[in-house]
Amino acid sequence: MKSSTIRKIACALALANLISVTAVTGCNNKAAIDPSGTPEVTEEPAKSVNGIFATIGKDYYIPFQNPEHSYCTINEGYAAPLREQGIGGCYSYAAVTSMQSNYLMKNGELIDINPLDIINRIYEAPEKDKNGQPQYPKEKFYLDTVSPLDLGGDALRVTGALCADPLNGYLISETAVLGAYNATVKGTPTITIDDVKAAIKNHGAICLGINYKKDCKIVNGFYTQNHPDNVEDMDHIATIVGWDDDFPADCFTIPASQNGAWLVQNSFGPFWGNAGYYWVSYDTPLPNLISYSVTKEYSSAISYGKFPAGTIISTDVVAMLEGGKDPETITLEDISDSNDLTIATVFEKKGNVAAIGIWTTVPDQPYTIEILDGEFGKVLASTSGTFDTWGYHTVKLDTPVSVKKFTVVLKIAGEYFFEGGPSDSIRVSSAIRKTTAHYEAKTKPGRSFVKIGEEWVDVTDPTLISRLGKDEMGDKFKAAGTIGDPCITVLYK
Image (cartoon, rainbow, N blue to C red; front, side, top):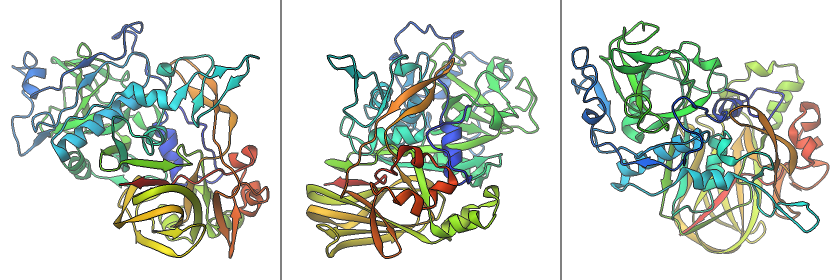
């Protein structure tokens, strides 16, 4: 898996791993898929695993026979459609499988969300004016040379595509980075096998990063994989839909040290693997496991900073670095225990605000949200808390607040996402190469602010980047000339 270039901070803080691990190359499975075929082929959700393994391994092993040692969302009635992605876009296909499985589990409804719609919200070919100059009317990634379907992406971009613009009525409510299983990853908490199992039972299908081509073969009729180097060698995102503790350890090209495997739903259609599914050994390290949730309870939303392009960090973390602290030794606790960043955005949209969408960059990162009347007027509502996982979260207000023009103030420990400024040097990965894209981000004076000492400083102020210590850190914000708007979403009833 290639590192993403949408964010580079000299200090290796928490979100570096979310971007580098989930920003994948476009998956290229030419042996199994005709790339000229439609990427919208969709199979109905499986009713039970019996249909998947009906003719496989009967004399060797029958999966899911012991309910005390196994579990599968398919058997529980929480299966999502099996899709065929074509060349790229695995990150979006896996995210949709997680969304659909989670919503079905929580609400009893299989929702209609197409991964292609998400991809097309992230990437677009620019229109040209009469002089042949490209036009960039929306905040997104513009491409001249490749198809959006060829490109990889990540959890940040999926979330940005759905945080404020409903898709068939649905907005993203949470993108939870659950942790790293059987692996040590800078900036990501380590979780146990029981944690992964609990996440599947509580959330439905969860996304994993994998190199589906390595050590993946048919053994005793089962398509299986045990890939010990997966942390350094990923190129694909798929979803775990269940597990079986008794799956035989010798049913892998590299025999496992223990029985047990995850059942993984892929996005290569029904003729790949075992009817579109395969088994990944418990021995395989899984660096970042992610769960997505969507909601239909909000009528509309607004966000000026949809796509995170970088973070700013608090003064005491900057001081650690200036004092010679090795960036690699900055811990999750250093971030969650550090000084608050205080940021604000002024919105002007009439309605009843019911929730605020924010990012956290480490588990248990304290935050406080205030909604102020007008431009920094009286406090209309306030709420505080933490989240067990890091990622994107929807914070519900106790009572919806009627607003016209208002300010959202966010106080959060240590680190926070901003969208940056427009850039022509963004590079995104396809199946065969990296290609340059234009990233369009828009801000304007008087809209978003960072508090430095007792002063609110506009994000368009040319002195802000230096005052935040960004000159010494070499952050991309310096090249962009602005940190842009903070990634805050306002959701209306």
